[in-house]
Amino acid sequence: MKKLVFVFAFALITAASMAQTTAALKVGYADVEYIFSKMPEAKQIQSDLEGLQAQLKKQYDNKYTEFQTKLKTYQDNINNPNIPDAVKQNSARELEQLQANLQKLQEDSQNDLQKRNATLLGPVQEKVGKAIEDVAKENGFSLILNNQINGLDVILFGDEKLDVSDMVLKKMGVNPVAETQTPANNTTTTPKKQP
Image (cartoon, rainbow, N blue to C red; front, side, top):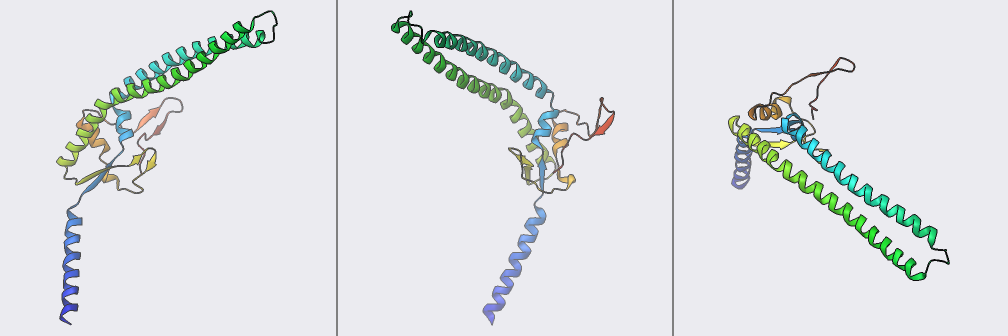
């Protein structure tokens, strides 16, 4: 009987301890995509990435046009008996090399975009991370969660009072606008998506 009382008392003390710990734990969440979209750097980063993407696409399109022109010439000449086989073989090798170059150019372009994206976003991510940390410390939050990761909701429900996104923007000197007017139909929309 004493063992049963002891186990019951231990369970009661453990539950009370967990309740105190849970009460002291303050959890918030932030919408990092929303924060980033409101930052002045966002438009410049987007513009820089779009400019690089357009430049890389133009290079690829020029090489692709060159490949298509040479492929058409090769196809026109493949059955022509007046063209020596050595010339046809040389053209075939040239086409294979051009195709390999096209594939490499495409891979290099993707790598360049990823590197530029990382270079441009790195300082912004550090700035947002520091602001989230400062807001958490200043407001007594034990944890700040991101409400989405790779487009998937992490926070399925959250009290709006625990959303620190606007506090983070204010900490970085950005004035979040809760509602904006859309000029096309003069309706009011709320740009921030709530979980």
